[in-house]
Image 1: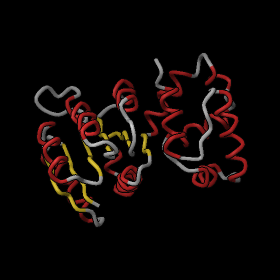
Image 2: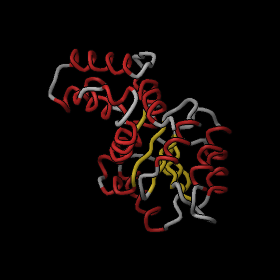
Image 3: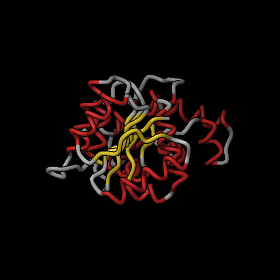
Image 4: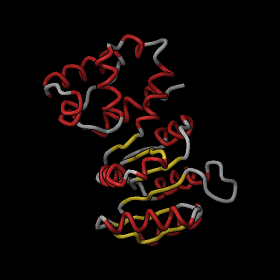
Length: 216
């Protein structure tokens, strides 16, 4: 798997490179700003780009903008965005411009858990979704007081949260210690309550749910 990294902090950039390479991946470029990211993606055509939301020169959302521009120039490019804090606006913009291809939004703290981070990289590179549990919690909390989300049962909210992290029915069943059939029933109910089209494609169903939850 070929990876491009965009991270302005040298120590973190070097640490990510070492972690990815230790897990059998090839880091084709490790850059520090958005312009270099776009150039690296165009030159190397990686399987995934791992991008810090805040990059030079302004350290606001330059990384996110560069990631979205890279996906526009190279449709289907999987992108895993890293952020220091839970910023729902950034998650919303990433989802709004997602198009095709895997997407992920993780807090940098998750990088400390090498197994979790590598799992997210692989999932996104394969076209899946990896959303940070903290982001999902904020979205669910923000939308829980009114509207269809408030009608979900506690179990349905658990299933929705795990679904939004990008987990399959089998993984959700294992996490909640219930059968896959029960998960399927909860999922069907969630789609009905949220007025979403059901889908057997894990990535599409996660994007649909997240797009709904991110609707301002």
